[in-house]
Length: 161
Ligand SMILES: Nc1ncnc2c1ncn2[C@@H]1O[C@H](COP(=O)(O)OP(=O)(O)OP(=O)(O)O)[C@@H](O)[C@H]1O
Ligand SMILES: [Mg+2]
Image: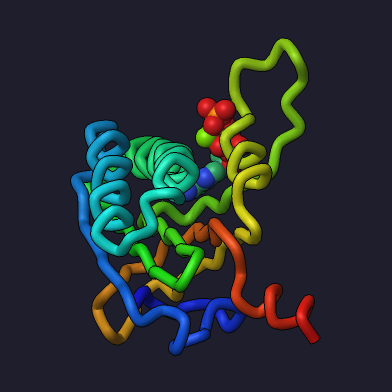
C-alpha cells in the first residue's frame, strides 16, 4: 500500500490488486514506468486503460525525475498501481520537497502542460506531501502525486440509485 494513502482513496475493497515498482531517479524511469503500467494493466484485464494510464505515468514521472534531479539528489522514484473493477489509481512518489503547481500555459509556452494533461485524462487527481521522516521507512518526505483513471464504482452506484 502506498504511504499515507489519502483519505479520498481509502477504498480497500476496491483496490484488491496492487503493484509497486521503484525506479532510478533519471529519465529512463519515464519509458520504464510507462511500460510497467501497461504490463500490469494487461495482466489485470484492464488493457483498455493502458493508453491513458501510460500517458499520465509519463507526465508524473517526468515531473518526479525533473524535481529529483533539480534537487541534486540521487533518490529513486516510486510508482504504485491500484486496480479496481474498471478503474486504476496511479501514484508517483519522489523525494523532492517542492510541490506541484498548476500552471496556466499560454499558446507559445513550451512547458506547463503536463498537469493539464493529467487533469484532462483523470477522473480525479491530486497530491499530498509526506512527513520528512516516515516511521515505516517507506518514504523520506517528498510527495505523492496520484490520478484515478477510468470509471469510478461509486459514481455508477450513485447514478443507479
Ligand atoms: N513531482 C513534482 N515535484 C515538484 N514540483 C512539481 C512536481 N510536479 C510538478 N511540479 C511543479 O509543477 C509545475 C507544473 O507541472 P507541469 O507538469 O504542468 O508542467 P511542466 O512540467 O513545467 O512542463 P511540461 O509538463 O509541459 O513539460 C512544474 O513546473 C513544477 O514546478
Ligand atoms: Mg511536467
